[in-house]
Length: 253
Length: 311
Ligand code: SF4
Ligand code: SF4
Image 1 (cartoon, rainbow over the protein chains, first blue to last red):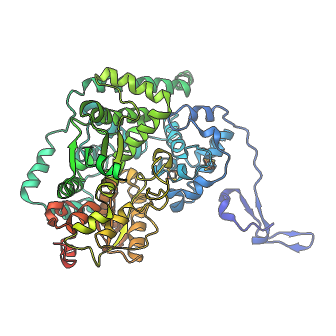
Image 2: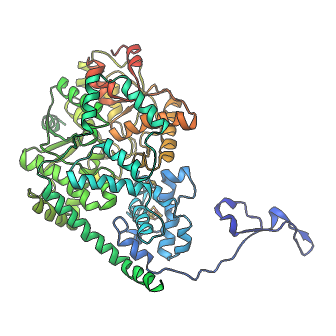
Image 3: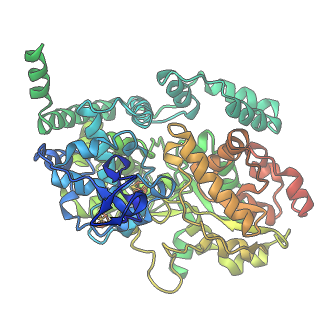
């Protein structure tokens, strides 16, 4: 049977016979494309519940697979493999290994909320994307994404001081992700920025590197936030049975 | 309308972190515009970060708390009933916190617990109304008022109005939008268009008003952001725009940064200028380019504003 929409099927699941004759009719090449039949045996039945236990994943059960999220998605328009509707399907079915094939791109959701706007079931697919990337990291399927590292550096500073100084956040991000701060386009940007700034302002900006902006009397808020975050982290570990995972790994060793 | 006109004349001003750093031009121009229009801004005392786009990914309820603290100070310490946030991120987060605190008991409990430990009064939904800088100018001065005050008309300036994501999405946190005549639209926002047109500008038909600039990953996934920004810049130029007017520091610096990056890494050169709407309105009202912080933008629009008779 000819399959015209081959782009919808993974290449490794397509079978094409260069030379094939069926009952005297030549069906070589294009006319003999088949889809490999598959048998799925490794369902992870806990996957939906685990992702639903992480912030953002709460409403995944509401999805009725209409596809509006994928249709409106900013990243899907750049990369057709970025497919929120499909991932929600896989998660709800427990098809973990299938989901893992896309593990390197799920974190790329830019939180534009076009999907949330379009979703007729209030699934908040944006949240599901965040919960899923978080799940992949917690389970050790992917290393921390650059996006997560940025979120952590940013949040650490807010929790500690109440405020953000963007220059500092940027420098720390480049350091922690092992990237050189001297990238040609960044240098060009700084050059263009400096062109019009008066000397007085430059000194002020230079000073800003030494004085961290702070909210006064923040220590109470800091402690309360850190306590809450620690509490939540332990809930998540429990929900994902991470301690069992660690224990199992230890026994195997 | 007239009720809001009076109410918004004196507001609690929440600049947020970006306006003290990379978005300082927006801060300067917003204050200068307010002064020129006789509107009072009382900065929220000892404010903190709203959580921006990052804290929610660590924990959404902490973001709700951070935003609620800002509103609590405005309401309980300063006795204000309106908070004006020019940054889309801040505006969005305060609105989101307001929505969650009105509709979700768990959020109320977490915020109450942290507020008590932090030693301040818990914010209760309904104590303040959060508005954007666009609402502020639109409701107090409006198109008619602007027309009367224009000194240097934006006549002959072709503008693509860019609103980004956080000003309209998700719809449910902005109950006052899509509410009939006079209200803002979430699918085709027009408040900025209206104001700039009143100042004489020619708005082009721009299809990517609410497209995403990739601001959330501007550094952590540069290539995606550059592609998204390149789309926006090219679409604006194709629509005939000379300027993209912005109303968010993250969008603004994202467009500026990735305009340069698109040139360096993709060989895509675009010449459309990127200017805050507050800078454009300020110049139209007779403020000098430096008074609205044009020198603090990364992209250089000095020659451009001169040829348009704005300097
Ligand atoms: S738009 Fe909502 S209901 Fe439709 S597929 Fe996406 S998540 Fe499911
Ligand atoms: S929020 Fe993420 S998943 Fe949703 S439309 Fe935007 S990029 Fe796609």
